[in-house]
Amino acid sequence: MLTKVLPPNDLVIESLLKSYGILHKMIRYDIPQMPVTVGPLAEVKVLVPEQVLSEAQSLLKDLNGESD
Image 1 (cartoon, rainbow, N blue to C red):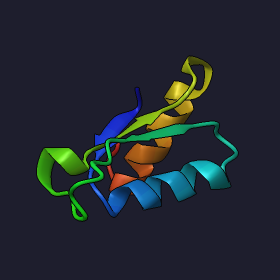
Image 2: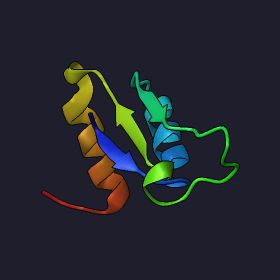
Image 3: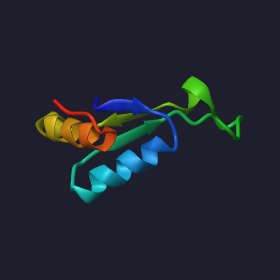
Image 4: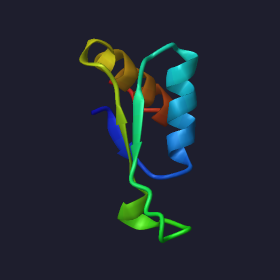
């Protein structure tokens, strides 16, 4: 697992991974009875293959303005 995020950050991360050609999967837990999800119910898990995990982590660090 790469990270856990809340909307709308999930869309930003998904776009970033797509632009770099990194395979990924976004796992969202939609509850059909609730039209709006907040807090832990809105959490999105971002998964990437282990082979590209370090590259994806580096991209997220750059996105967040972190340095090594």
